[in-house]
Image 1: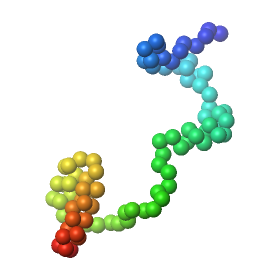
Image 2: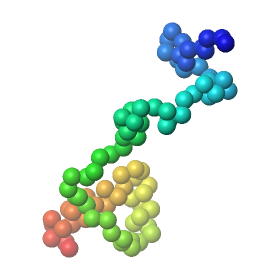
Image 3: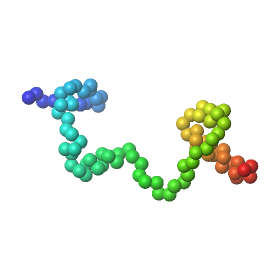
Image 4: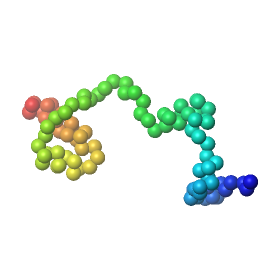
Length: 92
């Protein structure tokens, strides 16, 4: 059997994977349990230590929601900041 090609070249570029690469791949279940557990946690958030926000449902005017959504990701946090400022100023 021919020696499999390396996945990367000298520059570190990953080559296109072929059908044979997938045939030689090992099942996740074949890995040691401690390694499986480690791989499952990569990129996942741990439990929140103390909840800082409360999940609620609120109805807002369509134009208000559209305006905040147009500002991009994080728009809900910006709504929260505006409401915090209103509370601090005694508006509500």
